[in-house]
Image 1 (cartoon, rainbow, N blue to C red):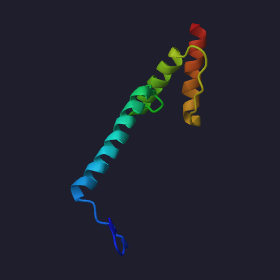
Image 2: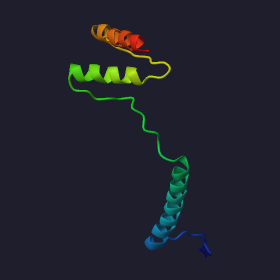
Image 3: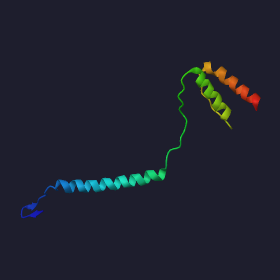
Image 4: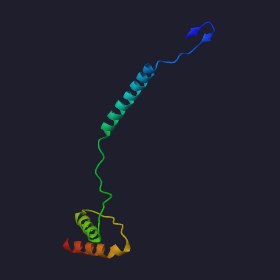
Length: 95
């Protein structure tokens, strides 16, 4: 507001301040919703598999090896290398 001694600023009423921020935040959230909807949902990757027990882990390894169509990169510890290699050899014999 202008006064003879210069410009003075008065506080905005709290309801007006909240309404301004509410409008801005609503616009941001609406834009975020639209942008996220355009992205779609993330594909369901099975990078992590929780197994309980050694036989279960070997069974899952066997199943993955049998379902592999082209190439499989398998990172394992040395104790599991022997059973995994036996699974690979048995698959090669079945092909």
